[in-house]
Length: 567
Image (tube, rainbow, N blue to C red; front, side, top):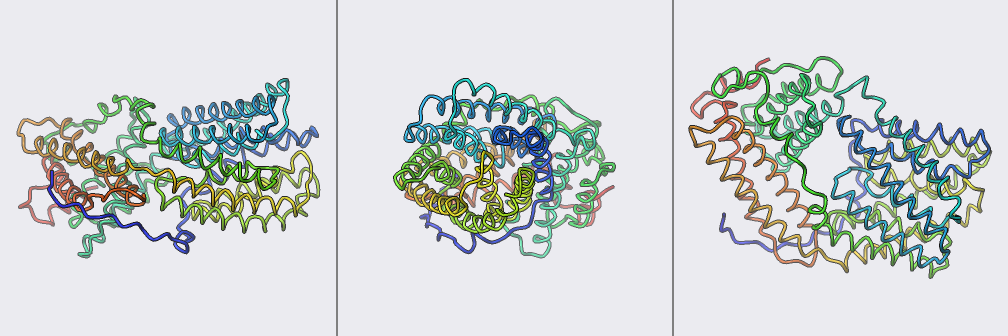
């Protein structure tokens, strides 16, 4: 382990303008946008025809589950969506039963805050992906304040369950048309990101940020490919070989042709045949597995970590969520609000991996909500033309939120805010000025109180997690170096060691970035992190060369280029 002296951590300046900067839209922004419209529209329109639009809040709870798991292979997506629907029903059941037993606002806010903390911790531990806990918290918190009787609860849950089943079908609908669509997109992203890094290296301006992004994209591609456990196929094996090519480019970026990587990425994004790159191990015959990549089957057989072991490190975040949501709700009640769950949900939406990101989300939430209430005031005359007009406005807001949120959270919130306000009008129209005023006040209360709670509950374990990540990288590097130097090392062992080291490097960078944005903690060993990353990258290159994926150091760059880009 390096003995480099730790350098003190400086708290980053809190961004304001930077937090509002727009990014590029997601390549598949239209998928969740269209999915949520397809999931919400049929149940809502059916209720319009039946004259029971007052029940649409319950069907919408199930329909919103269609927003999840669009980045996962369909076999894994089926399970994730099922668990999301069950999680939504569980939170909804607790909320409905609580609402039927008491109308004490303090009790309702407390239950909502505890539910938000549980939902946040479980979603982060399982890495369910966007929109994570926010939708679940919105559903459970809103229904806490809807008057109920115990006799109504089963019927309302049945409506949500039926809509959730429909959302599951909507999420799985593309599978027959593009059965490997998510894996293709993840592989294409890895190739594109690696090509961008290779360009910086070829120009002599190698970027640590571009390298980290490329390693993260390759790691994400492997996670996606391995998510469909025990379901190997010819297409997936071809995609795995393309990801190996990306890994080779990471090990030798100066000898990589970025144009070839981008051409492969563009071909993969389509629906045609996956390009065949050739397997360098098979070509050279040194470590050859002729028909499939070694080590993949073994990795698929590894069971994931138990949920309880992943929940432990999230304790500070769960406490922040519970405290912030409860205090925001209490303050909202003290100010005379009729819908304190808006403040509660605002606080719940803030909490990110560290305080700096939490601040950015607070800025985004406030700006998006303030613009959103203006949009609500503009669309209200149209929405009140009738039940059908109200549903169409809700569908438009759903589509806009998912289409825009990928560019920046605040931009998506511009549509989410009128959506939440329109949902309150499903049982009947309410004064526009009162709704707008309440929403603005609750947004400010939720953001201020929620961020104050984040300041009060610090994550002092962040430094220890960096130390553990450094230890993991050192151990993985030593193992990979030992196997690369050993003449009797098996292909499977080398492959597993290489991927283990790459995953450890990705985890170290993510852990260090998260800890750097945390406050009130001891100095972080930033120099050791940089040195560990550099040593790991050298070992990865040596391991790739030992596997026969790169030529020996004495081979010319022309030969390397020819071997690495063979069709």
